[in-house]
Length: 170
Image: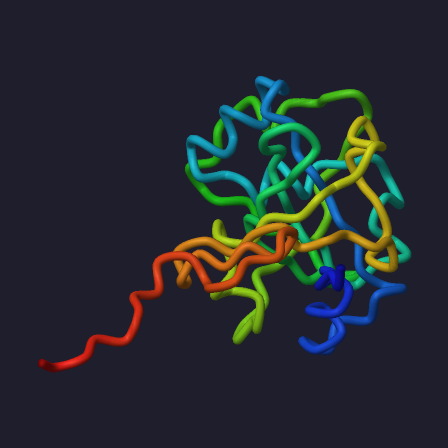
């Protein structure tokens, strides 16, 4: 069976796989749930240990999904040397000290070629699901692309899902 990998898509979108970090936020982590629900995903993702993003220029953010799959949420650019941006109405819990973490400068990517896939692209994170971040060079199979004719890449189908057969006039 032939697979389509996230790394294939990232390469086509001109991401340097060696300088791209994949993050999978857990739906079991109360801080993530609250930040995501309140619209502060960037602020939540920015807050990491010192030097966490030093080797990366891009961060591809996922949330955990069923089993070991992950749903693509968004991408950020790491702007080394810049100051992080925090929304003025940011939830106070994200601004409080937490396990020695600091805010890092993550910014939305203008004209990001991955934007059309937000909340539509699913990957297989793999057996190491407890490892919540991995390098962009790791092979992650794209398992599903929803709301775009519902193509499923991990299984072979004779016809794409939800594509009607050609109508004939009698």
